[in-house]
Image (cartoon, rainbow, N blue to C red):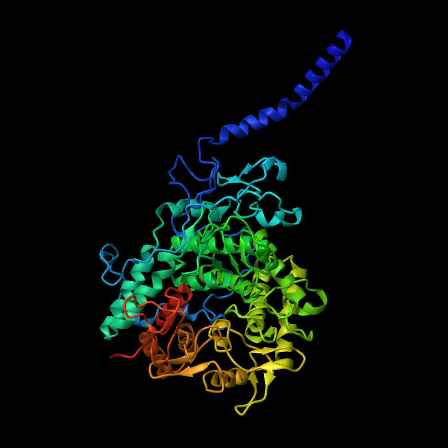
Length: 629
């Protein structure tokens, strides 16, 4: 027994010596960690000082004082970088309207603004923290890895909100929080860490632009347009944006406290003119794009997302059987496949680069996200044969019959309504534009990604060809585009207020070699704005395009603004602006989802940030065309 005891002691001693280097490394890591710091995952970063940065003590690269010269990607850039003012890119709205040249920014207006009004609206979402699952399985039983700390200094928990007892293993992934937060301390994160300390929502640049635009509008006796712009332009930043500790931005849609990929990208689009000179706008848009990447990588079929399950604080503590059937997780709020959501991410990425010439965004995560988008859209060209996607509100759950023809399948319209025929043409047009933009980015920053570039180019060509083979319909006006087709010969002639729409073809910058003069697109526009479109309504106050899920003859201010944005007629632009004035809420001067054509006070949704943003973009873009009163 004595001999055996000595052997055991010897073995134990050897094992201890072998573990010594590992203990030393762990000790060094522990010294870097602040275990006095709160170990829950807050949704707001703590107050940051030079002694308390939200990432480990790693020396950050020096950030130049000029925000427009922030560090560029290390990937090679060609000498013939595309001109960001190229009119073919539809970026003309980014230039300062000539009307504003007479109204330079008065620095005193930032401290005592004349027109800017602080919002009294409080978001319907609280960021104070989620409810845990009702009954938790001990963490050791569901995850053998220890919780790690991200480079931003906060824990990365694999099941941070717990697992209900009795949950089948097949559903564990629905409760995973492992990939919720960004964990990459690169130049964009360090920029966020610096400028988030001085971030105001909205930033002074937004207030300054409101003052300049309103000074001009009041000089031509358009005081009501000034009030509308002063409320709608900052609304997204005032009420829907939350910067998270990982440098990403969570942007809700308004009165529904969820983040739609589509809505959130459209909500910040009007701030692009300010981005080249304002690092605060930069970190918001960069943060939103990185939040999009995390969500898309979670579920490319998802349209809206949440930070935690009980997003509206209704007391929900676990997912239901209906949630399972709908493909939801604690972070995927809507699994109703709307591929335009993926296109909005590409569009904002592309336009942000073309506007600012900042390319740090194009890293391996962006490439991974884009490849997932391309593969998903390509798979859905063969929906019947290859796709496993099902959704319980579709009849049948795989969708109505389609015939594969080169178009990519769409589950839901951008209005969230189910498609009648599942080849939605405006969305397919949007995909063509997005693939072309991806090809340009890959050519510029990823020259070795020949395969991905070929897939994107092929997808754009095949869809564009299929649009003109299956979705061009004869009419009394000449050939027009259908809104939906099934590829088997059936089609749906209509348009919907939500973007992408047939009305928004020029806004999306869709063009085709099959319609070089734009004749089909112009014929389609005339159809959309006529009584032959079953969703076009005209009343004594306003006229425009509606949507099937809003009541009666209610039309959408968003569609009125889109009509003006896509028009070159000064008369039509000013008619649209007058209707926007009539549609604005009489007390808040904000936009609603829809309004009655003869009684605009009869509306749906009191707070719809996307509509506010697109109306503000309309006013700013067409400022030089506004008539004097």
